[in-house]
Length: 467
Image 1 (cartoon, one colour):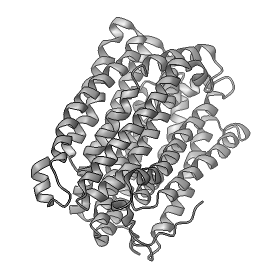
Image 2 (tube, one colour):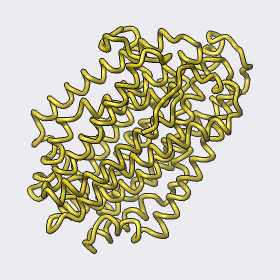
Image 3 (cartoon, one colour):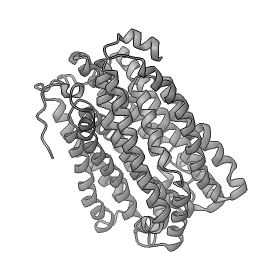
């Protein structure tokens, strides 16, 4: 695990060439996010090959996606807002305020993590049934989520602090922590699943153990008082003014992930109704594959975030535009590659997850249809992230929710009535197209206004021109 040595604010964010900065910050984030996606894929691959029960075990895992998305939403509500605020404060060289935001993040993540776990535990069976579980998949889904919920606070704190490490100018350490969890999880998974014969519950135990170790290192990192950004001896504290602002900034990503929960709920229910439990497993496989490319784009977004946030705080608006357009270009290339894999090599991609030919063929068909216009997704994700980086919360929320709630849910509800299971798969490209059109409308107005700004404009003037 790499050791961090940074003790000063990375002022190069405001001076170094944008293309070099983006690669410097995005590549570690991409590696980390790809590793994070592989982290989930490893679980799915091992679970899908559990003897005699693999097909239903992977379907049970897919049933947990809505609840997992909701947990992630609670974490991003705190983490994304805190990371964004810290980047801006560091750009303004306001180290004291950045430290207060960090303390608030630890406190809020602890509170939200405990509350979520307690409520979910109390109603786990009914929740999973509502999310699409039946008699064949409920035992697997319940075994997995019981362990994951027990470590929910650890998950929230680890991902939150890892985001702050990246936003504070140490992307390589953030990458190292993620790689550590992936590698250790890949080692522990087969031990717990097959050697100790713990099945799907063993995969969950391996996940929580790996995150616990990574969290321990992250806490040690931020308790070092020699670093410009560190936790005080009293690591818990809450400033409601900072908390309110942080939660407001994180509301966009929170609603996007919460919307993912609702969407996954509708998907599971419609798939079970029109295709049975195995079709839910097929979606689980398709989701894992697609998520790999989405996570790479998110890696570019994470690389863009500290650069855009710092330069926004430093009033260097031309650099904000430069990093956005460059990020959008790279993100589109990533999703175009995902399109090629999905449309031309679907059987090879899905075959790694299951040896059941029926499940494999169902997943291959879904992957091909679902990602038929995948290239435009990268651009839409980066544009949404730009609004978030500029603190334009309302527009970020609208764009975050448009694809999933405004477009995808109605399609998922209506189309299966005409096309059965294919109606679910076709809902994705239709909603992607409509969301991209809306994004272009919002973005064209923003780019015009940014083009009229000069570097060094007063923030008040900026606000009146943009917001």
